[in-house]
Amino acid sequence: DRAPLPSRRPRQDANIPRAMRPLRLALVASELAPFAKTGGLADVLLGLGRWLGKKAPQGPGHDVRLFVPLYRRIEKSGLKTTPLPGAQNIDVRFPQRTIRFSIRTAPLPQSDVVVHFVDCKELFDREGIYTEDGDEALRFGLLSRAVPETCQRLQWAPDVVHCNDWHTGLLPLYLKTVYAWDKLFAGTKTVLTIHNIGYQGLFPDSQLDVLGLGDQRAHVHHGDLRDGKLSFLKTGVLHAHRLTTVSRTYAREIQTAEYGMGMDELLRSRSQDLVGIVNGVDYGEWDPQTDPRIPHHFTVDDLSGKAKMKAAMLQRFSLPHDPRAPVFGVVSRLTAQKGFELFADSIPVFLQREDMRLCVLGSGEDKHEKYFQWLRDTWPHKVGIFRGFQEDLAHWIEAGSDLFLMPSRFEPCGLNQMYSLRYGTPPIVRRTGGLADTVEAWDPHTRRGTGFLFDEYSSKALAGTIDWALRNWRDQLGWRQLVKNGMQRDFSWNRQGPEYLALYRALLGL
Ligand code: ADP
Image (tube, rainbow, N blue to C red):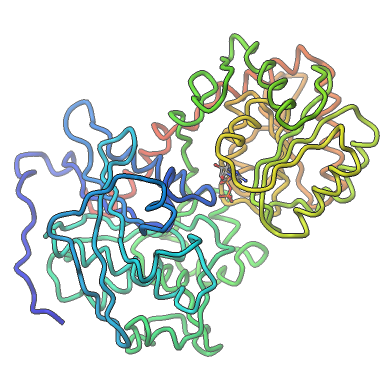
């Protein structure tokens, strides 16, 4: 490797008290809204990045740099990016091949934060964000290495490198090994946030050689190695200075065999370093009063726009409109995690019995898509479905529905239930993960609460709760209060962001 470069820490902050000084933060992920998104991870990076980069009243914001791959879909979107001087044509040597990348930048919309797109056609100029290609491990291995490589070129010493999910799981180990010689990173701390333990980045252990970690076998999970495997996420859990996940309940749950997906023992061994921080909501994007993606706006004091949204949405789904018929909304990845298998023995009963509507937006596993199509074919005047990913329709459904369905088997945090609360659409959720932390059971007597919860993962429990929700729907006065309660809850980054900042500062001893 190259000879060590003299490392300089910028002196700009010499006069600022240590505890106040802006931090240099590198946030790294495979997704970032609005550029590349398949789920909540993208929204979280956008919201947290914006919040951290915001100018504080008494001084500058933190120096935040977001690192994400420059996927083909971003290039094709027409986004204007500029080459970052000093970070062009960087060669990263892996044992079997050398990979060249450059950094191109663009501002994160409505913020002072700069996105560092890792431009590497060889690996990222592909159809999808995620692939099943043979070099998937290398694609995200490169993303991890691109961060320290870029920092070196810029002589920018990050205080914290904040990694997210398995795609960035190798970064802490790379910093400890391949880049250990470089004093630039002497004070750098790493944080790994687990957004979903269902995705671990499992590869054959032969990938260690491909990734340049062949001589680090002692530092990856031994049990996996015995099985001939390498887990990106476990490697991250082993080596990051601090671990977070996206709700308090999920932080507890993943340390149990039921929810840990094989990682519970490892997580228990690091339980002192693991905290749950609920995701914030970016109300700049998700607020029914200002949302540019919906045609009718509304507030907690004037819900007339919501009634109009209901009519407009039903029209879009080609369903007949009746203000008295409750509309259930679903916006989701259609995967096993989301609990739609519970619909099979519950939803048809209600569709048969009730004058209701069900509007679904989602894509994913074939069997779920087919099931929703079957519902549509069987009750064409009650069920509407859009397959695929449509950002604006997601906003329409949040705004135009009366109830939001999210019966997840597990849910690290979940954003949709928080969006639905804001849009006056009480959620029906299972009491798990972030759903348990963000939805409070409605009690018609005290008139407290924001939604409807069930515990047992069964169709019966879901059906019972839908039934209960429908009984409450008939009491429109109570319903109004329920809607108001939810709309007034605050899950903004102004509340959640400081928890991350406190964690960074504690980690840095500031
Ligand atoms: P997850 O990250 O597990 O998918 P979350 O509730 O945390 O679940 O976040 C899902 C995000 O993805 C939300 O912003 C939601 O609106 C969006 N989303 C999911 N499916 C679709 C879809 N088919 N079309 C548009 N947006 C979608």
